[in-house]
Length: 112
Image (cartoon, rainbow, N blue to C red; front, side):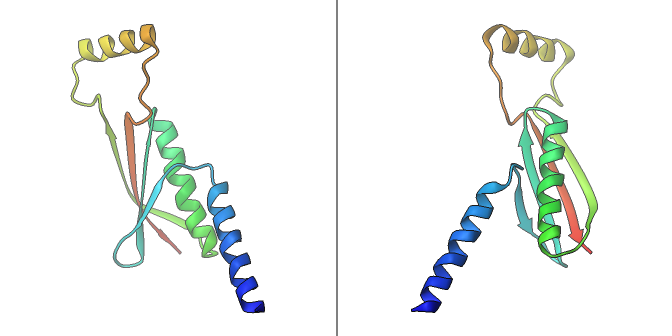
């Protein structure tokens, strides 16, 4: 009976801790003890903060330090002309249109 209570408490604690993080990123295990952290946000800075923050949490859980091996950045407006970017900015401002996934950061990292 005690082991069932203990198991229930552990599951509840993990669920609560998982909900506490404020970083919006997905962690994917890769080969050779590396991981990818993928974050999408309305700005490059926000996406980078989310990816680095989540990667740091993963390493802290292992009592190790974050080592970033590679960083890739993507933006939905990368291929747009200046005129198209200006139009999107004006339309977005006038009509309060905002996409929280305009920028994507992918970090390849390891915990050492």
